[in-house]
Length: 254
Length: 248
View 1 (cartoon, rainbow over the protein chains, first blue to last red):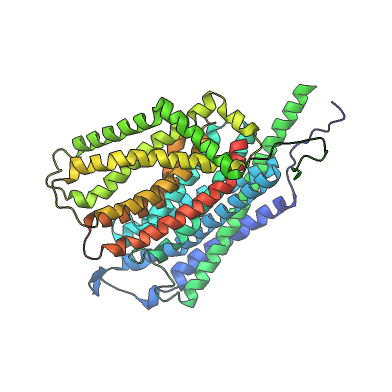
View 2 (cartoon, rainbow over the protein chains, first blue to last red):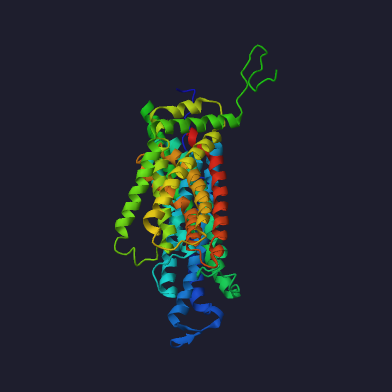
């Protein structure tokens, strides 16, 4: 059929040129923030201990003061995972509006990035739980809702694998990516809704010192850039894959 | 005569389009009639609920006497409800799919979200019918040995709110999983994380009502409000998105 021009998925738009600078800048910023968190930012409220001491009723050691540094990675990574989920849902909506296959790929790749950062958050959060609270896991509201968020993201990929028809798969996963977004505000707000939660709410505990804010912001910017770079790289790869597949199908028709 | 949307030609006489409510009633009546004739869902869900209670009996055989069952009762009851409704929801589109009923419904020019509302209502009714049997059974087997708090009847509220939310989310998800490989596993994988916030709130409220301690309303009202909020948000999202899912 020569009159019907077969559309081949396009790949390699201009944002791909930003990948290398973005990843490099992200790596530099994250490293700078890492060094800053350990070398420049003091422990919370300037606390420092040479030996274990009793503060209030709690035995505090330098290990606990140092493990607070996990916070500088834990929170930015968690925020990036939320942002990735928002993008996944946004592209899910775009797909359902126009049924362009491109947006399904966008949504899927954003969800993959979300999964990566959700896993990072769980790992850093678990280190925190172990060293600050002394347990590997506790059924605390924030931890629980975040675990659920991770399970929803995993379920998204399980669902994708279980549907054969590409059109149908795209619709279903678009819908699930929108439903998954409902859990994001819940996870974000839960420590404010249930005040008995042991999860620290920074704003409730008097906010951060300026040097802490600076370190968090630098690391967050770095993580965002890394996430963007990964997203574009993965998107390009997925898109090229689709392009090759479409070209193969086209060749078979001749 | 009022012209219908597609009746441009004056010779073209369409019967008056049935109202959305009558479409809803027809679809709901179809589900209920089918159930009354086969009794498939109610018997399978009822027997399953009884079996879960029997498994509880084995699981708690040695510890039941020393255990404060009033503190655990809410949780156990909800485990029973979640697994029973999972079974029922998985079946709820089986007939539609097997006997080609879904194609018939989709051929009718109706707003697709009416299908969602009718199916959700049917699932709520089935789940409530099973709960009406299962909750007294649970009480009979595990809670008669202990003094009952006067606040026990208040568990009706979290049960109702939880059932509505679970039926709504479950109807949406079983429509999705109807077309996937390994339907039942897929439904569980999606259903349990998505109802989790609702489940958490409902278990808290139910446990507060069963225990009935002095400040029980502190643990009853707030979770119930949150559960209602989750219900509203989820039902709205599912209602809006149902059109895409059912026509895919």
